[in-house]
Image (cartoon, rainbow, N blue to C red):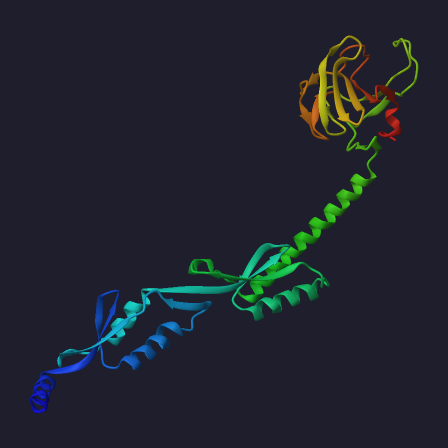
Length: 312
C-alpha cells in the first residue's frame, strides 16, 4: 500500500504541483506558491502602504488560502491577486484642522505642522491666549483631505485672526456706545429721530398753543426720514386735529415716544419696530407752521423734556 501510494504521488507530481488557491467570499482570485510570502506581500503592498494622510488601511474581506494540486502549467498570479485586494479595502485618512474660536480655517497634514502654525500666529500677534485650536480629523473620503502648504495656511489664519480682532474691537466699541446711550426707566434710546434745528423747546408758551409746549420741535426738510428712538410696539398711527399724522410707540416700562405732524406714516397699529427703523417722514400736518417733527416723550403717561435725554 505504501508502495502504491508512492507511485501514485510520483505520477501526480509529474503532471501537477502543489499551490494555494486564493479566494474572497468564495470567488477564486488565482494561485500562489507560498502562503507566508503572499501574506507578507499583502501587508507590505496594502496594509503598510505609505501615502499622504493615510491613517489605516483595512481589508474588507480576509482572503482564504486552500492548498491543492494544479497543473504544472499554472503560474502564480500574486500581483493580480494583490491588485484585486486593493479594490476591496477601506482607507481612513487623517489630517489636522486649524480653527479660530471653533470656526475651521485651514487643514494641514501633520500635527507638527499644525503646532508650528499655532505657535507662529500667537507669537506674531502677541496673543498667547488666542483661541486657536488644532482638531484631529478622520475621513474615508479622500476629496475631503484638501490640505494646504504651511505658508498658505499661515496667511489664511492670519487673515482670519486680523478679521476677528477688528470684529472684537468693533463689538467692544458698540458695547461702549450702547453703555453710554441715554436711558429712561431701563430703556436705551439708541438714536435721535432726525437731524435738524430745534425750533421750539419743551415747556415754552406760544400764541398758536392753548398750553405750554409738551414736546420738542425739530425743523427739517419735508420728506426727511424719521427713525424710532428705541425698539417697541406701535400703539397708534392715525390723524389727530392738532398733532396731524401721529405715530405713538410703546417701549415698555411706562415709556412712550410720539412723532407728530408727519407727512407719511410707514407703520400701523400693533406693528413691532426696531430702534433706528424708519417709521414716518417729516411733514406739516395738523396745527403746524412749517415742516418739522414734534417729538414727545411720555413716562407713565406724563410728558417730560426730550432734551434731558436727546439733542443735549
